Image 1 (spheres, rainbow over the protein chains, first blue to last red):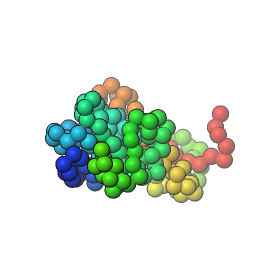
Image 2 (cartoon, rainbow over the protein chains, first blue to last red):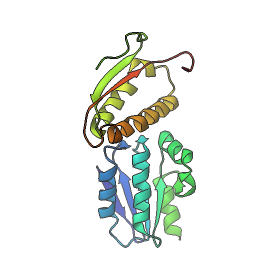
Image 3 (tube, chains in turn purple, blue):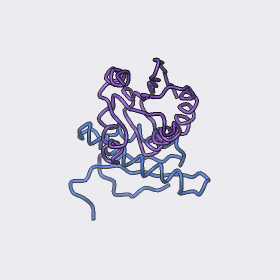
Image 4 (spheres, chains in turn orange, green):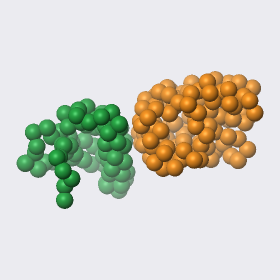
Length: 113
Length: 82
């Protein structure tokens, strides 16, 4: 599971470098995310630009990571591809997460507050 | 594992092991198979999601923690089956 991080004073960005988060990789994704988000950043942006496929295991892992961050930190998403966006809409998870059209937009927004 | 004898001409049949890595490999093959080629990219995405959810449930539950074969037959049908 290839994940790349970028750190800014208040924002930790995690860019997923894989084309899918599925049943075969969800546990690994969750564990890697738990390690990477062990910082004090109040905001975490998960960029899914390269992810072409997300199943319920992958969605469950993303929700689990959000819960791991606890109530005092926020997790936002960016760059959802059409198939991934459909999964979030179908499951109403698009109402739970703030979703930005691009990583740049997420950073601009996250830095503003 | 025998598959039904009356397969449509574009049918793609596949037998694989009930585990997440084999399901992922099977999905890649099924999505590239002839029955999928006339679908739009959006519809192919829907089919892949439905197949993934079904096959991952099979991988997780069918053999109660063990492993075994899964047979999958994919073809296009002019109308919904009864």
